Length: 430
Image (cartoon, rainbow, N blue to C red):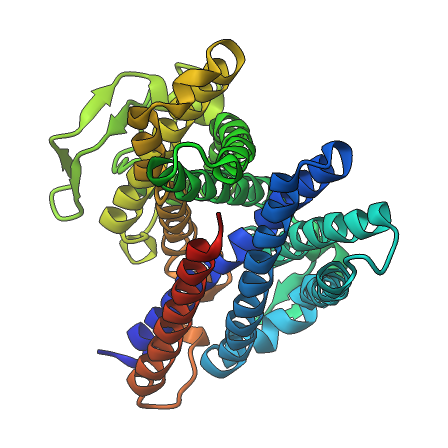
């Protein structure tokens, strides 16, 4: 294993774990706030029990998210010193604001956890809402930094150095908003379906449980609405990618040759050697429409870029197909669920439907992992798109396989602890 591959693997593993903790940290406080609001309005004991149970989950994921995020911040400096040398003065602003949002989230969570019967009930509820909005803001600021890596802005590049730096322009780069919205919706989708799946299992074991029934309904609505919105936002992000990163879009769709019009490929196995896609389903003109809103539009293929600047096509294509496939499936399940909740809510309590939600529980997070694979692998070989190659940013320190193995062990330990705590928590609820 080369040091470059070890460094990239360590970042991939770290991000792969952290994004799960961060996504739950974004969405879960809102589920908690909804159940708390229902308790304040109805005084039904089930909502109070649900709020307290979910608040413990929020605390667990906040703590693990803080640990994994701190590790990532150290990894950026230790593994990619050349990147930080140039990127720090340019894209440091969103990280500073992310830290501010994180501290606000920590303060609000502390008030919520220890404020029961100590402060006014609605002020207590408001602290929980602040936890949620702070988590969303924290995630958006991080995406601003990642968006800058995909659509660099706020500087002039002269003789290999950045001058005329504008941190505000860098922070509000062209990719930030669309990526941020896509990730935020994905967090609500994945968390909603995961929580609904967990409580669906609870209802399969205890069909008369009011606790699980209330939890299932809240999570179902959140996940279903997000699942319906996500394809719409995904379409907007894909159109932007066609403009800002055409090589990434070409790799996502395995479009080796520029085409006018361009077909959409569903499935298939791409080959960079033969520049073909085997076993794929080609839908004529559809990629042109999805990328540019015109069935006759030209879509740039990989043939327009030097071979050394191609992203890994197979990995990007497979990850994109997994993300889209899971997203479409969850959107269909979500739309049907909302219709059933409106017209025939009793159907949602059938054992067949509950089993379906239990199966769907991990699909949102699988889609998130696949989506981040598309984002990061599809940007290669660039760490700053069009300006700095990943191989030029890595530390010269040898033996990077050893910290990679160490941090992999740390994250596996974190995952085990979180899983044990959540299973223990689930067993203690009614």
